[in-house]
Structures are given as structure tokens and as C-alpha cells.
Image (tube, rainbow, N blue to C red; front, side):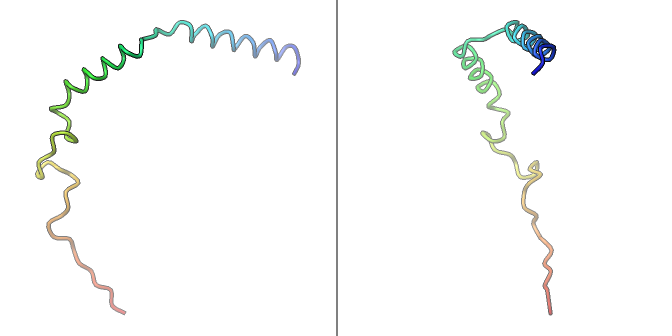
Length: 72
């Protein structure tokens, strides 16, 4: 590796490290508490927890599926 490409590589690395150093950090305990609060607040609107009426369910099975017989 030439010295000029090595310098360019090091400058990119320093820039990346400066960007990462400027990121605001949140403690894991605080992030977990925030996530738990969010989940509890949105639980009444979550169809995986509360279920979904069959009339609003786009994935419900059709009442009468067409039947095709294959004859040879």
C-alpha cells in the first residue's frame, strides 16, 4: 500500500471515528424501559395481541374456493 493511499485510508478512519464519537448514547436500561412503555401503550391497537375481526382480516380464507379437477 502506498503512503498516499495509506494517508487517505487513515483520514477516512478518523472521520468515521469522529462521527461515531458524536452519536448520542442511551443506557440499555433506559432503552429497555422506553421500549416496554411503548409496547404497553400500543398493545390495545396490536392485532397480534387483541385479534382481528374476520371482516377486517385481508388474509381470511375464502368461503368458497374454486375447485378444478384435472382429468387426463
